[in-house]
Length: 258
Image 1 (spheres, rainbow, N blue to C red):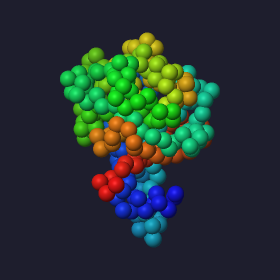
Image 2 (cartoon, rainbow, N blue to C red):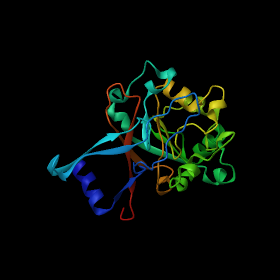
Image 3 (cartoon, helix red, strand yellow):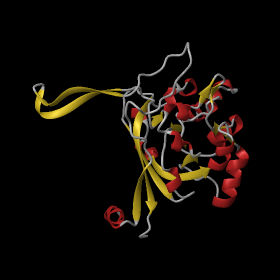
């Protein structure tokens, strides 16, 4: 089986799609208002570059917050999951699974504050079948096109950040009524930009992490995935005590040669 899997990638029967936003000092990051504290942005610190500190090698120190760029949220990240797993404790089998893609890009183009509803999910299920046990639900909003500018990506004004997300009742319903592994989004966080004012605040964090489900943010290339049938691999750093980690996220899709 494994040999056939490798052969399928080599022959193009399986395409590997990178869903990860490249990580650099320009990668958009969450900006919390005062008095809340923000994580440090990603940066590289040169230690040597084929010079006196290291004549035959180049290497750097990295500085970053756990929740910068494409990253995974572990249950312990949120108060409702405070007794749950940190990143290093997540069962690796849960980091590989099927992908179910719900596309609301049309709705978001008309309303950047659009919230996924239970009705949206039920309509998707009527066409594609019930969300499978262990699947990653990926929400395609078209937001990735804004990734070249932090201002456009965060889309903030005096009333807050206007980015799409999931309605409160839908977040609770997905967390408790569907046996999915987690939610992946194209935006800077798994909750909508205005979710701090919801009840409960940040309902995806509240319900998903409190129910041993995970979050993935700042995904790209979701438009290259089918509604069902793809498999994704999520590869966070196994940080002991970590509440999250920058992650490489890959999708396997049946290619044109299949």
